[in-house]
Length: 123
Image 1 (tube, rainbow, N blue to C red):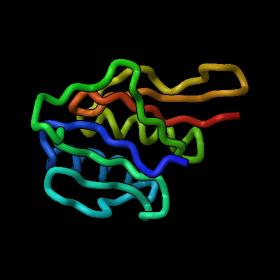
Image 2: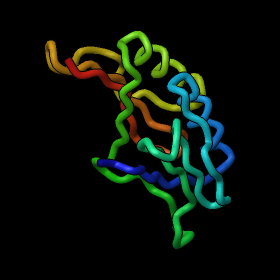
Image 3: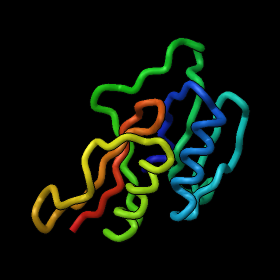
């Protein structure tokens, strides 16, 4: 259902470096780069993450309540990617752990531009 999600950034090179390094363990790369916007993912046929300088060239700001969720496949990978996000300059928004017993395990962080994301597993 979801084709791609776009997040605004202030520095394209920093954003591409952060997200491509962070998501590499999930098989993601920069699929195409048009300068102002770049798409990251495993293929053009799967959901992608787009990082972009806002079209109106106005100030980038993360939305209140907006968040991108990634399902890396295991709690071990969630823990690994959360730690990697912090090593790459992200900030903590909630350490890895069970949020809803037997239902949801997640680890929350923000990228260098303040965009919120989570690595999660259901069940």
